[in-house]
Image 1 (cartoon, rainbow, N blue to C red):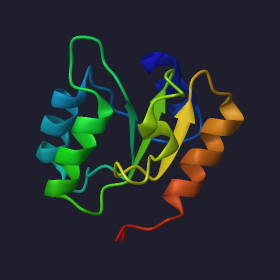
Image 2 (tube, helix red, strand yellow; image 1 turned 180 degrees about the vertical axis):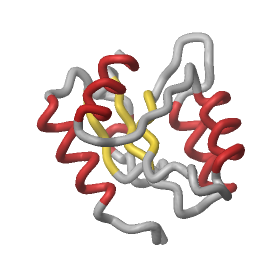
Image 3 (cartoon, helix red, strand yellow; image 1 turned 180 degrees about the horizontal axis):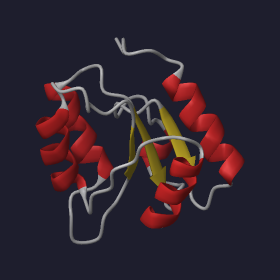
Image 4 (cartoon, one colour; image 1 turned 90 degrees about the horizontal axis):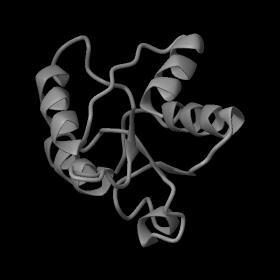
Length: 118
């Protein structure tokens, strides 16, 4: 799924980096957050078997950078985070499976929000 999403976003002109889980996402975010390569948007899976999921990762990232913008994606549409994604710190939620148009709309909407979150 990660590679398919990467290819799709790259076709739309975005520069994309992928990592395996939330721990790696936090580490990479910290590495680039004060550089010209700082991330404009994160797309995080809510749950990662055997690893840190998006809910915990975005909480940690927002402590470091309250202006971070993130979308949560999950196949667990009944998870409370999907219904109340903004309370968890996400700016949009994508229930899996999702269509390209849904991804494009979510990415576009979040990218238009600007950097100020709160």
